[in-house]
Length: 183
Image 1 (cartoon, rainbow, N blue to C red):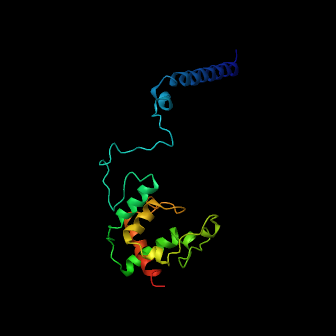
Image 2 (spheres, rainbow, N blue to C red; image 1 turned 90 degrees about the horizontal axis):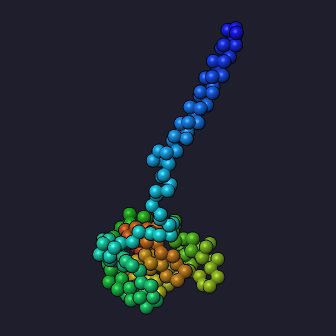
């Protein structure tokens, strides 16, 4: 047997040993604990949300009620109770600018530039147009009642509790009362 043949046999032996080692380690790794990660994870469904253990477990600021009223009568009662809330944000040029910026982002699509309910999305509503923010219906409401509507939504209007924090909602109210109240 020549040198080339011996070298060739060593190469084949090395390759076989490498393949056996590679497959052997793969089989061994199946027994390690990380193999069970998907099996041992917590079974949480996408639609399940953690809920507080009781109503006093989560601090509530800004007059928001938890849980939300579920009946129409409950919504009316909660809105009437919210009328007593006073706006903690003073009407300043800074507040009005913040409110204007937030209105542009969140409200204009339905209520329109002039607050008349003629926004591009508002015009698509099949049943009725969004509320005209210039009318007495809106302007005669207290800041607390408007805060309640922004927080909980009403009719076709979605809730903005999750999109705007409490201070941002008060800034929007300052803007609505100032911009649309004097027309």
